[in-house]
Length: 390
Ligand SMILES: *Cc1c(COP(=O)(O)O)cnc(C)c1O
Image 1 (cartoon, rainbow, N blue to C red):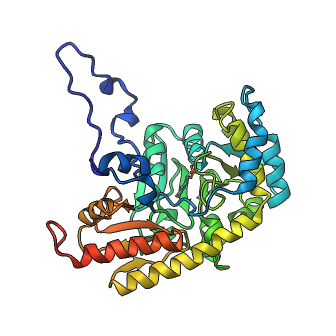
Image 2 (tube, rainbow, N blue to C red):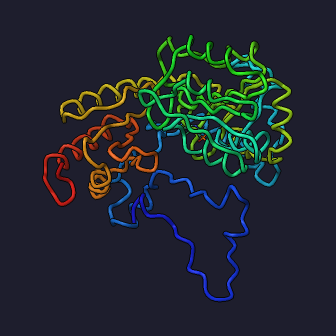
Image 3 (cartoon, rainbow, N blue to C red):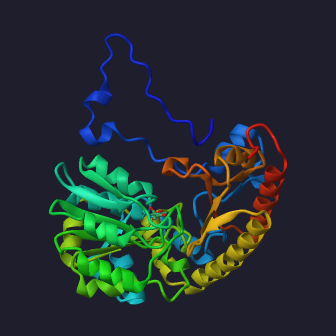
């Protein structure tokens, strides 16, 4: 079983009720989100020991957990029997301290994924639409359709958002535009002027959801900081994550910054205790430690350079990226390459589900992990085998 395997509904027997037919209209056409393969799953499938497996599939930090975060969690353990502070007061205060955000305009999420779902639930419905790009994060389409709204996928330009075409696609029924900068799964980005022009063109009745899950890695001054646009655009919602560069993927924390009015609306659909006790303590500690972030950026810069150099030597092309991953063109169907990498104990992300059958997305790992990936890829691409020949 691999990424391409989809769970099929059990065959219905005579007399069984077809619950799929009873599901909400938008849900019937959905397929489940396909995450990167977990290390434990490959361990079960191949018998390779976990410490021989390299996972470069989910854009997680390659650093070990932040010791300050671990300490904060241990300190918080006696609170496990209590519900969390549903208002997330301490985390919001910390975000004000660190980023100057107005706590009344902050919404906390169980990962930023949770925020995307809240936005869709609060603003999308049948008869309304959301605009997003081809090769955008899969959750945008999923959340839109689950809400029964129409998803308007706009053809990409250079693997990224065609902001001009997206602005033109907005009509009176468009309640949300989803926009990632930089973009996942392609790594592409747009610059400050392009964002400002776009925000000026989209009517105030349409929410612009600017997803900055990778912004901490984008060490390029040409990229805009969405938070700076908030005072001038009451329809802007900036989503950020502590799961990527801050290293809290397993705990799930994200935040949205918006006008207080929009935050109050999201609060109506937010689950009362969506960010758990340990995640809140961890978020405060993580936000308090810029050194961990800096170390992650340093390792990422070095890793990106190492991957570019190695991929270049293998004659492979990649899409330029301002993130912690590179999306590589295998120049042939990537499925067999993906499978051969799994056999070698290296997990990357196939993108056939995104309509990119020749590409693989590779997260930046430690120097040793990147070297393992490059060596395995080199062996696979130079050994003609069944299904791998160009
Ligand atoms: C990873 C990712 C997210 C979700 O992050 P979580 O905080 O882990 O839920 C959102 N948007 C994009 C583009 C991502 O790549």
